[in-house]
Image (spheres, rainbow, N blue to C red):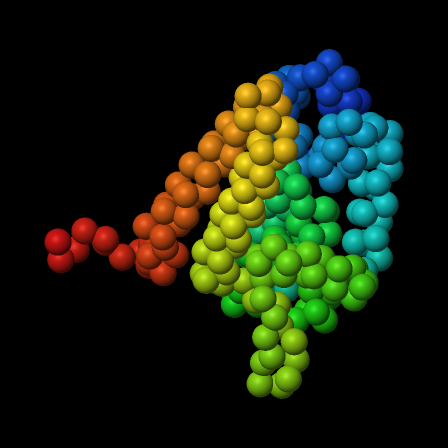
Length: 244
């Protein structure tokens, strides 16, 4: 399997594959590349409908050029905690960012979410995010505002009175419950439409079935989240069967 960065020819093959409606996995198979490589390439360069091979290649060259300029000559990447491989961590952060983008987040929001997720402390200040992501404070502020509105992160003050953006175990549960409430609200709105459009009409039947479906989904999500909540606080290294 070839390594290193994608070539311009490979990017052209990706563009042709997308135009033919091929899945990322099939394009990756034809290139003998991991599916995650193709997914990340497409999502960071406009998505499947806007991907252009030549533009993607130039954008990659510009990013590489900026990284070379930003790094002092002779400087090495800072050591990673726990002896982690710095390049592997960077690659994983890009993959995680791509997954968040596929879930509907904007690129910057996904980058902030990924950065917080892989931080051991689960919290960073605005200045730390600016430094790590090499973007403007305004970009960080906008991304955090969205994540906060979706209850993915919360704000708190540290001992130095700096505002920190926090992602922890409780946030994951709270975010899931926020999704449950949102789904239930859609169900309730759909049900209101039944009375307006008529319960026996095609539109009324469609809305009623939608409401029933979403009611079931939201109730199942809430029940599953409550039942699984303790998993968020478990130590994966502990034998869960011990003492039983």
